[in-house]
Image (cartoon, rainbow, N blue to C red):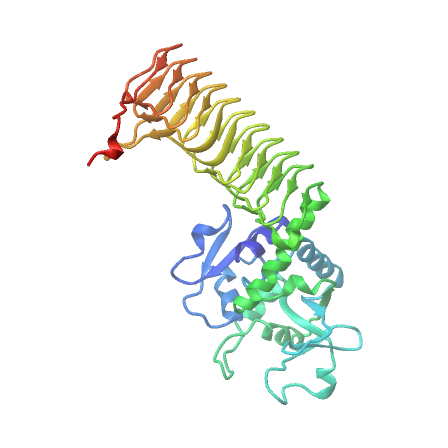
Length: 422
């Protein structure tokens, strides 16, 4: 969740991004390169958190303070706040929003010139007057400061309150006491400041984020048949002309080319699909799929699988750490693991590469234009030459030369009258 406001700040052109976290450093491994961290030894409020990052604040630069639990903030909103702050001449500018139902939010009280006088909290009865409760403009918790003005008041913040915490909004009172102005900039999209305090809040912002993400893909020429039943992660790339059917999940660093058809009921995770690929009722994880390849229904491509152009992984096929050559087909009911399959090869139903001997895994190599019949097992390590044919029901344990027919099965023997014996 913290990654979202960090990304927004970077995309808005922030000179430097500093994330304040706990002493365990749990956030650091998940932050983009170049993002710095500051340690707050004990959670003592927002003002104390900013004070812990004071060493990174430059007096001659504006400072925007974002909350890690407000993930929907956008680069445009941040840029708009900074621009409004620069134009106003205020020492601090508060981002506000106007709500039809402002219950639970601090109300923004302005003076006759439009500057912020204070924020009237409403957590307890009597905190705000009736006139203040009627105000619909509320504090979002997002603030922009002049760096020097912020540094001058951070050290004067007090924890003299019921919670014993140091609150950042108290800087606004101190700035006004110093004769400086505090301005406000109102966003026209209240969703950008929604906070997450529980699972219900997380579900709400996730739904909004999904609408944003899918909306961007729709604008770029992607067809999403049922957005409400489609999940697309923020880093996913989808080419124009692709159709995403209902019930699909596109996750992680997935890249989908142009003119593809994905779904219904398909999961792509860290997958790469070139143009014109078709995936039906299948799972593709960490696999690469070349142009016009076909997958499914009910196929499972695991990490390291790679399908060549015009290749096929059909019904109930599982492929792992294998190269399937251009035009090659694994039509149905097969497991291909740790294998190389050549161009134009067709493997029959029930083909299995027995790649594990109980200690290590071995590779199977199948040449180009090989014909494999049904119920064939290849016990690795083994090599099948180009244009070879494997007879139905064979267990291949030795290399097969080019252009050869491999027959590796028990000879049929019929026992007459077997079922009538006494």
